[in-house]
Amino acid sequence: MPKTSVLDCPPTIYGNRNKEVAEIPIRYCLYARKSTEQDELQALSIDSQIHEMKTLAERENLEVVEIRKESHSAKESGQRPVFNKILTDLREGMFNGILTWAPDRLSRNAGDLGSLVDLMDRDVLVKIRTPNQFFTNSPNEKFMLMILCSQAKLENDNKSLNVKRGLKAKCQMGYRPGVTPLGYLNEPTGIKGQRKVTIDPSRAPTVKKMFEKVGYERASGREIYRWLVYDQDFKTKSGKRVTLSNIFRMLHTPFYYGDFEYPQGSNTWYKGNHEPIITKELYETVQENLKVDPKIKYGIKDFQFTKLVFCGTCGAMITAEEKFKKLLDGGVRRHVYYRCVKRVDVDCQEPPIKEEELLEQMIQLMDKIDFYKKGTFDKIQQEVERYNKFSQVVFGKGNQDKQIKVKKTDIKSYAAYILREGGREEKRELLMNLRTKLYIKDSKIFIKENEVVENPDQATQNE
Image 1: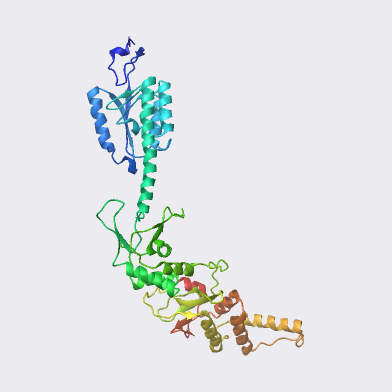
Image 2: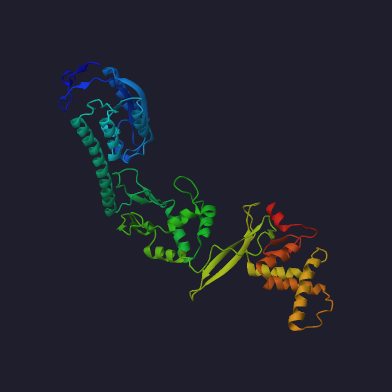
């Protein structure tokens, strides 16, 4: 192939080359990239870049064999799959030039820039072409390419610092970055980042009442949830129901009394220029009431009568929930309530009943149950005989070889004893052996006549 002097070629803006090179046909890969990040909002869209490059290729009679495009940031090296594929195809000789809108489309980091320069040093990448300039394996042109890409990296780094400075200045003026919490609104007009925060007239009173119920009435998070969702029909700004986690997040947000921390967890506090919804004293009271005693194992649920009792009003299952009340001496008292799950009728009005009251009613119910009719006599008789034999051996009551006779009154006494003193599994086994459903209506427990079930747990699952 004949050689031509670089002096016969069009000069670049950086001067003529001072040595002879072989004229090599260049096959270009057109590469267009648009970052989705804020710092590149002013860059041309991908379609605009492709159109610009195609126009240049037609005008300059450039051979474009591939068009590659991607939406990805170039701040970090090795993170762009399309660009990485271009480097691989360059090494395999699919093409030997890159046509792009600007050098910063190729690289905004030292790693990817080093890969490009290395391919140019090895004459694998012959030319990088842009609308206004081109870069080849020339010391001056490679140096200029590195300067332009390094300048793009410097701009990124400076913008990151400027954003942090801007956010800090915004906080110092009393504006919290991010979306305002429920109960507040941002004015749609005004300087961006300094738009006035106003109280939401439709939500702020409910938010204030929520804090007061937790602070003064010691309401739990789930009670607040039911109050907001079912009584107040409280919705978010997007029209959705609030979640339990969102409620706890609101209760732990100091923005409502006027202060805010930014960044979160930095322990750097600022005074907001918005109107508080609650007082700081009420907020601190709420935080104190929301504290969980580490000695209390709230995750352990020891409910004794779930899946064994049904609602006499709607027929749904009776579930249980526990509540903890702090005492004046610093202790905590646990209360368990049984209530309808309302799966059959969401408006079921059956009131909850305390576990202690339910237990006493069950003991009284033992006198009304015909154990022989229910087929439980044999099962319970074995337990009573075992207990009587134990008493004879240990306490020497009577002759241990004498046959033990179990009376009906003994079985009822045994059942009452198990309900009072037995463990959770013993109580559940006793009630399951009754082979009948227990119902609660108007806080009174009863059984339905002529209703027998073989497996109360299975019956529960079928509800």
